[in-house]
Image (cartoon, rainbow, N blue to C red; front, side, top):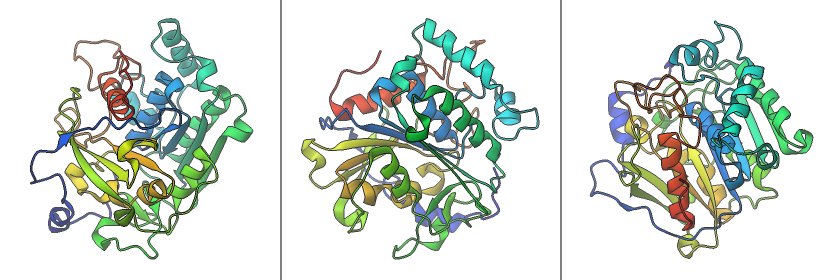
Length: 350
């Protein structure tokens, strides 16, 4: 990835607070959160993973938000294709007809959800027009794919491409005490990939997915708490030991909704501390609208040096010719769904 705005080692060390260096975190609690209005949101590799989850289990989600990523299953289990067609397009654009055939094949084997279940989702697609990590045309390809799969895309789908904006998550900085080291240039990206564009994308995204939300009137730290939890109970290759949960005051006893938020490559706590889990703007909006936010964490490895979510198949068995990472049998997919099941106190998906 482009890293023009690199954090210094000292800034990274200062940012890495919370889970790192503390006592082992507690297990993810069973909160009996509402299970009928769950959204999944992701950026970059997290955006690819978010779409994989929504396609695999559409009956469990009402909203899908994707930032700076391309169409569902774009890599088709190939790292070379991921790099050549799903980040850049130097090998040509993704073949949407082939991806539609892939989805139909999965449906015949009960590996993803039905057309009817997915067709009811609301979706939000955002891309920076100056993105040099994931080509903006890939966001357009995702939007085309979703228009084919949603029942009424003119009312269910919102697509935005932001001019002069690079690869990352635009955030509003006015009135917020965010360390400069945890911000990236709006156009250049790099660093934490939290873009200082003075744009409240989190609010626009959540409002589109869930409708007429109440604007926040208090800082997120005053309206709730950011907890760490033990991810080792959710055994899957590529997961870090510790994840995060933002829990608004009053949600401890349930009666709140839930959003799953997935970081991008080089955006986990391992690399940028708590910048992503604290500063996207999601927490303040969630607190104002009784919505918990789950922030699972991926980790870096030899097979996955930037700590990405598995959108090309690295977490599956090395001998698999056709890894099922983008289906209900994907190891990371199953772990993420098990986390949602724990929070909503419902049976985990098999």
